[in-house]
Length: 283
Image 1: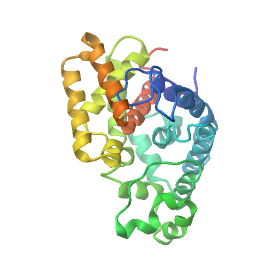
Image 2: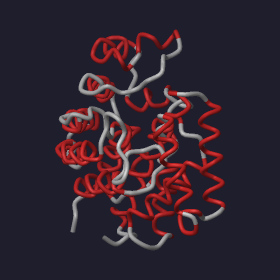
Image 3: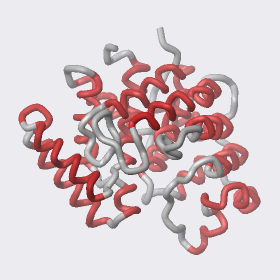
């Protein structure tokens, strides 16, 4: 029987092994500076932080340790957003994983957890849009330099996540009881076939449901909506099962255009963890 930390690592590995995931690295596609093996190494490197999350260690330091380990490969940022979801989920799994359990975990985060979250940005290069003017002192790209402002405002980690919505759908999961993550787990259970294939289909359905916030922030809202609408058309046609070539073509096009729906991949990884932890998928 796997531990929650082992299921967290396995979820990261299954997510990147799934294909096709339009715009994302998978076992058939690399980006110019980010390759499949970087994600494998990142998942293995994150294991110590996931193990910390499964103990009495605080959430913030566990996340920082996971990011430090993840970043110890040449690809730099591979799974930052996924780990921001997995760390509280792994902690919640100690008491029986549920939405209420993970809500309790995030509500108990502290200012010290938020400070560790900020320090994590010193280990890795994460794309973050410019904050509003009144939030400039709390720009996460400042790393440790922003901690005095964080402490002065007495912001916990869940407070930081709340201030990141609606522009960041990973942060949104923290404020909605991981709504989409649990929905992704339900979809994985409902599908049949090899788990990586199911994960690819769930990824496409999540992308169809809602424009990816990483795409919106890196490009614009119109591009994010276009990608989501095209994914929805493929889902409506059941293209994963009936016209896989169409999905493969879409996947390659997004890579060629530099469009990476990474937030959708993060939520897919969280859904995989929940399904593995609930033992609703076999592997």
